[in-house]
Image 1 (cartoon, helix red, strand yellow):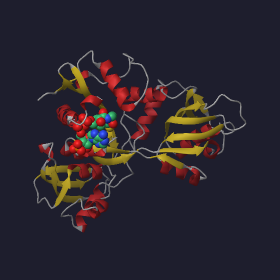
Image 2 (spheres, helix red, strand yellow; image 1 turned 45 degrees about the vertical axis):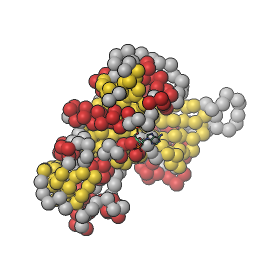
Image 3 (cartoon, rainbow, N blue to C red; image 1 turned 90 degrees about the vertical axis):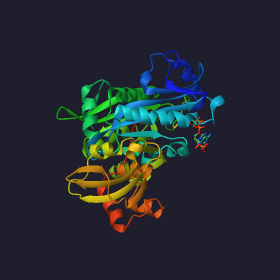
Image 4 (cartoon, helix red, strand yellow; image 1 turned 180 degrees about the vertical axis):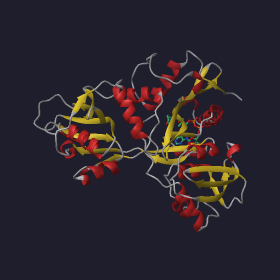
Length: 395
Ligand SMILES: CC(C)(COP(=O)(O)OP(=O)(O)OC[C@H]1O[C@@H](n2cnc3c(N)ncnc32)[C@H](O)[C@@H]1OP(=O)(O)O)[C@@H](O)C(=O)NCCC(=O)NCCS
């Protein structure tokens, strides 16, 4: 075989950066101090000495049903143009699935630019990220928020995020690395940037991090700048309302605010909710690396009882393949080998059910759950019910 698949060789980070710039666009110079996963989390393809492609695995976790599920974020999948259409990306992915399994990772999630590549390796659409825009003045919820300018390293920011994220399906249980990556995303926003805490009884109850971007330096009586929020989370509706009002207080001079936040929740929170426009809703894809571990790790609604006899199809990872009984009770799930195998389910579709993104009835209507009776559909619906899976991080 002409290509070897191995860890990125030390010294090839700059070449990887060049291929990434060719692959995704961008003119930022190589920065040796930039955040990168370790070499054993960077799987590369070589043609002799030449780097042909690579992907990165970001150690992380996502919250599902109030419990943290270990997740390998696959990012920066690139193959140099001269090596494309030779199956290298598929081989990189195959190696990354094995690596994540060795690492004991339960699931893997990624943002796809081509779904066919990832579907062929057991990923399926499993949640969304919403980018919405609203005229700044329309975010005004009234009152004068008690806001304090805070530093990004203020431990109260992390503490509040951790409390908020765990009740939201799909949000990252951020590791040191994913925190650093989130801050890097914030720092990529143009200046001026600011991070505020909304303070109530000496506690921070909401965080709003945003930038005010000037599209033009020409004097104008129109709005002078747009705003981009990258950090927005609140412990309750009142906290969110104050954070939104803080943003809205730029209304006299600002144009629109761009949010990376669940649009549906903003629509509920804002008085004139109909004025929110969703600009983009990219869907992310998830794969069950270890289906049994993934089911054991996530939380389920406490009063739900369900049993479904599945026949899981997973050509890449044999430890997931074959008949399995899914049982949910007392907020806990188990997936045991055996059973009647009534419902044939592709491992990708199981991931899509697992996160709560796909409805079992919709999958069956699309011809995807062969053998499923109405009772099976209802049991799967009960099992994976919960809030819509969402991410506010990019990786
Ligand atoms: C996407 C990319 C990684 C594919 O690399 P590659 O080594 O050429 O891919 P492979 O030869 O292994 O092809 C695997 C599958 O990927 C998909 N794919 C590959 N190139 C594609 C293209 N230009 N358009 C759409 N799908 C494509 C196909 O499903 C293909 O399978 P098929 O040939 O059986 O249909 C490469 O084109 C690239 O680096 N693109 C720019 C960066 C990017 O989009 N990365 C993915 C980020 S999620």
